[in-house]
Amino acid sequence: MSGPALDELKQQIPLLNYLQAHDWQPTRQLSRGRLMGLCPLHCDHKPSFLVDPSKSLFYCYGCGRGGDVIRFVQDYHHVEFLPAVALLYQWRGLAPLVREAAGFYRMQLHRHGEAVEYLQQRGVRSPELIEHMQIGYAPGGGLRSWLMQLGHPLQALRQAGLVTAVGYDAYRHRLVFPLEGNLYGRSISAAAPPHRFLPGSKGGLYAWEQVRRYPEVILVEGLFDYAALWQAGFYNVSCAMGNHLNAHQYGQLCDSRRTVYLAFDADPNGSGPQAAQWLARRLSERGVSVRRVALPEGHDPNSFFVQGGNARQFQLLMEAALP
Ligand SMILES: [Zn+2]
Image (tube, rainbow, N blue to C red; front, side):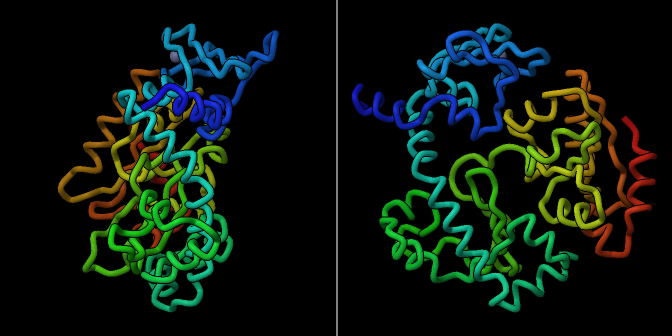
């Protein structure tokens, strides 16, 4: 990797743009345009993260980390130098492409009865919810030609993981949910692996910008759990896409004082409750107040509502939740 190529990459991705795309907001402006805010690299309680947008450099007075956008990506995603550069290249090229792919999938949703039927089976009925989550459907063809018509080269589609090496649409018969910089695809057929993501990070907590202002936040494992709760009127819900949080998601949960209700799956094998217990311990060590919601055995929040549970009953479970 040559020096000029790196300089060009850094010029194309100003540090501040990258930070803001990852939900960072300055809390205070200093002299010479410099900004101060909470540090995304450690569990920061008073703003100690300094950004100089004119030089595209950062320094944290809390954890002592500092450097350019590549250094930030290394620390933020816990990767070495070269993977960090690759992530930045991917991030630069990916955003518009993923947005357009998501738009194509959304157009397909109501053209495919099997997709709508699956949503109904999972209790997703409200048009506002479908709109809010921007749910789409990947029928298994048509994306590649649509994107190429819009002028995206095939190579870019392959690189983003939207198209396979041999040139087919990668997502087939999957409901598609846009995430921050990624697309989650849920197979509607039992024959395929249920969950799929594009290469790269699954991003931060789902819909975090809308949720972070609530003093109480409900955290669930899956997007269909999220959907069921949102539809039942719990708008303070977020989703980790699994029961294992990445460093970014973990940092988000402890970025201010709040109570977190963990409503993980009550798997008969105990994996959901175990993950919740482990996470609860880690969060309370950082001063976050945590309650573990105990769902009836074998249920996740989605099945709880689909099989007749209502908002009042869920509220009671929250009130009974233990640390
Ligand atoms: Zn820091």
